[in-house]
Image 1 (tube, rainbow, N blue to C red):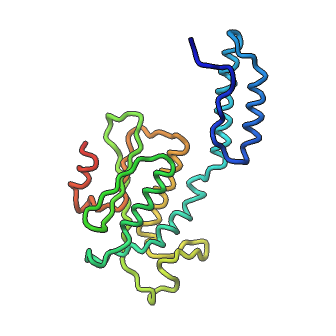
Image 2: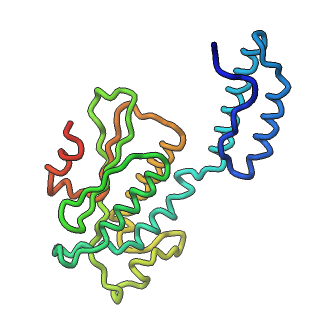
Image 3: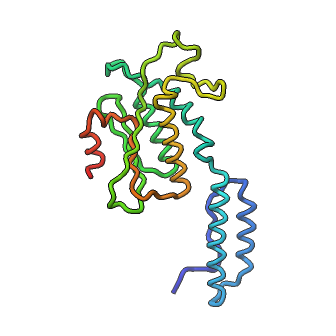
Length: 220
């Protein structure tokens, strides 16, 4: 008994630009007669085809550096002003949900929890090679100090690119770092890179005020 090698399996969905490459590889595989003597050759070809497809796919995926400006710009456009008053603090829930969407887009499982109404926290975890080791916590807060537009030379929530810099509230505290974390996490997942230990990610950081919330999401 064994796997049916009578013909190639349906190819995975690939970008249109890669279709000719895939077609050429499938044509090559058709030249092999799959019998006892040819099974090893067929397997080598299949492995080679998978390697080429993975390499080509990675070539068209954005790198962390490619997308970090777009990520920080979008984060800045969320007005997540923290006034200190829950009644007027806004934007954190939508922003945290957007971060979750970007992580799930590349394969992460996420959990969204509110420590208080509207105070959104986004959690994710990238498993490491040795899960017995303690996880490394990567933490970024999404709220910002309120900004009065009249005090600014640019719209504080427009993320205007000027003089090769992105301007706006949170551009240096700390949506710039949030965007770098998000870009690198997305790149890690796309590339299949595995850290030595788990990476535990928390976006917004209300766990600093509510430590029980963190234990609720990750009890160990």
